[in-house]
Length: 225
Image 1 (cartoon, rainbow, N blue to C red):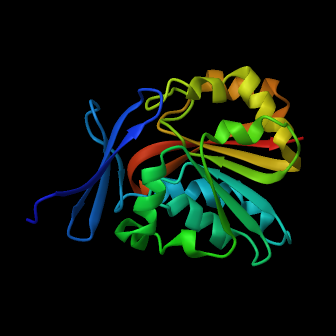
Image 2: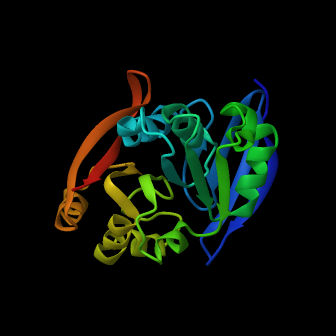
């Protein structure tokens, strides 16, 4: 078996730890220092794609839709969002760690088909929270995969994003009938209730890491009323 080769490391801002990108043949892995197991693997991305498919399902015939993807990862969520919307739409991806963007411009980008090269893609290098500060209804869909879900793992600051105040800010940044979709490693009834209190029509959907098998992940779906 081919050995893993380390391609790069990246420090997560605000003492969030260090990411390590490795490659073995055509397989890529991203790990977080001090955490057992992987954050991402290029062979396991079904739930990341489901995040976009579910979150953008209402936009199949919407011209000029604007979708926000929070978290670049390995590019699978971004590519699935681009496939789910029309040629006249726009998809903005926000990524906190600049090295992750650069990795996706390099060999890692081949895994998802180099979605950063799509003319509909724009990049916000920084915290996705920055895009919610003006609270203007700018997005038809917001897809968040910035952590382990509502229970932050890589960034304690992400608790702010999933707080009652954070959810309310996101709600105001969606256009009428806009959809918020959030990837999570686990279901969370308390967070579901928080979404409903923010006047979302909210539900949880279980998806698999691979088609019909693999780990079970949760997608929170919250549509603005």
